[in-house]
Image (cartoon, rainbow, N blue to C red):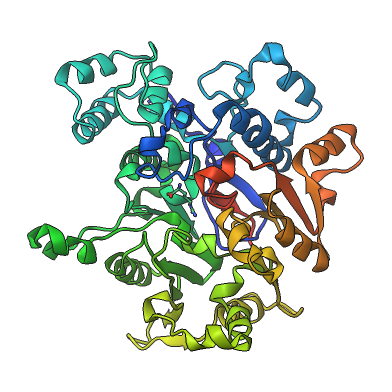
Length: 489
Ligand SMILES: NC(=[NH2+])NCCC[C@H](N)C(=O)O
């Protein structure tokens, strides 16, 4: 192995997440690679995109700001006072390219492309991973042999983008790799790896599995990496019946809300069998004591639970009104709506399992009841729980803004979250709840001028330009896999 682990490195390799809001210290994010620019209209839906994106705008005007904000909060010496140089045209964005010598190379804001190039230095890992990928992608033996000869940095780039250094495509891109939330989830000091429901995300899972099992920064996690096995019945089922018994789970459905309490979505992407397995494994390993299952409608609009709600502060949540108590009350006031019967599959169902209390779950009727219980009882918050609704619950903006990820926020420290700038009504609702809203570029400008420091930022929603990013159907929560957060006070 090229990278070795010294004692001082070990502390910086710490992995622990016990809340959604403790100060973020280490995170995995992936900058949009060239594969995103290869999405064509005929494949967009298969690749889980609603549209094709303009890669250059997505990078320069949107995602690069996200990286700079994350670095300013997590690893400031990488960016402080350097932004105009970093973004100077003659530097060709090299700062953001993991394969380039000028890459920011932080051990706090980490790109899986770098981790992959490190593990590919190991001959054994390289051969095994290439064999696995080439089998999945049905490559010829000659292609596989050629790939083994590529330098690690090039190979890493190719395995992610699907494109060789000569720009020819050897397999499909994995454009959803920017949504690192879905590749795995840190649950206290364990990592739960994902089992994607969609074929388009298969290679992501394979790369992630190899990274977590082989990279020296995760070597201490050996017994703490959890993978969900397929049910043995699954293999004997006719194809038409397979779906029900499949084990699928994506990270957007898993939320660590307090040290003992995990939320897991039962959704379009996460199957009942996987949920059962997670409960069994986490209880057996004593990783958490309480697991709440939130069954959401299987709809493209919702996909994972983190598209419906996320947490901003111990007592503040942003959520979609139509699936909540607020939504039902609004509906009841509308006589015609109340005549329409809601299909059971379109209703939210919340069941809470506590270790040692058998299979008898506690039921919550509404999302607000559960979130309030988390704020007040799990987190012991003294203030009243506040709900900020998507689109400020104004028809039809709740649904419109949820579609562009108004409810999908990454909290980088208590009360400070990153959101998309396009969700005007939700931003308005945040302001009414006492938050400030500031554009990412403006905030960076203030950091550079020294008028404010990241430590001084409080109760603020940082707004990221999102015309292109939102077409990929994920927000900042999806675009982050936290590895380390401070415990909440
Ligand atoms: N955690 C999330 N909500 N991830 C969003 C993923 C979006 C991606 N296009 C997909 O459909 O898979």
